[in-house]
Each structure stands twice: as C-alpha cells, then as structure tokens.
Length: 110
Image 1 (cartoon, rainbow, N blue to C red):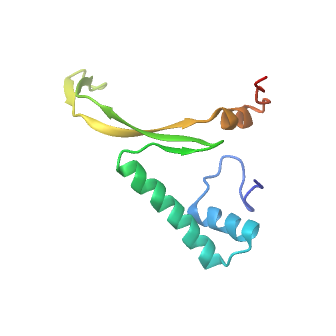
Image 2 (spheres, rainbow, N blue to C red):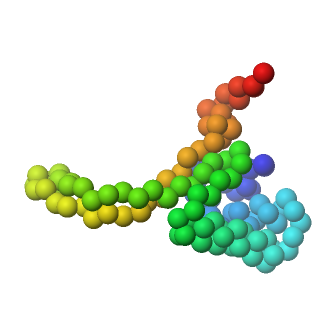
C-alpha cells in the first residue's frame, strides 16, 4: 500500500488519513471513503467488544484476554493494592507485518 500523503515518520495515522488513502486508491467519493473506513472500524470494535478475536491476514490479530485479580504495588509508596480482574485487548502482529517492519524477507516454506 502506498504511503498516505502528508505523513511523516513517527506521525499518528488518523481516520481522516485512512479515508483519504481509500479515496485516492479506490476512487470513491470522500464521504463514501469516510463511511467505509468508519464501517470497518465499527465492525472490528464490535467484534472485539464481544470478546472475539479479529484476525486480519498479513497484518495481525486483535485478541481479548481476561486478567485475574492480582496484587500490585504503588511504586511511590510501596503500598500493596488489589488490581481488579479485567479484560484487555492485545495486538499480535503477523509474521508478514513483522518482516515488513524489520525489512527482512519472509522465510519461504518448501
């Protein structure tokens, strides 16, 4: 995929940037592009909220994990405090994405 126009290294990519990229790549109107990006993000968010794993081929997976209650420590005072159980989302990049980030060729299976 081509770089989003106007982005620089270390810059945060926004919904507007994604919409602009869809607009330029697919030729949809700007409003249609924004709607498409919003629909995709809504669907991903809804699936994650339901506790489902979202796997995007060649990109990675968004996984919801349940963390149990545990004892934490206030680093300033050293006092122990209970940390309540909760669900957290983690992102696991695919091997393809890891290779792109590191600039290494993906190993081929024979």
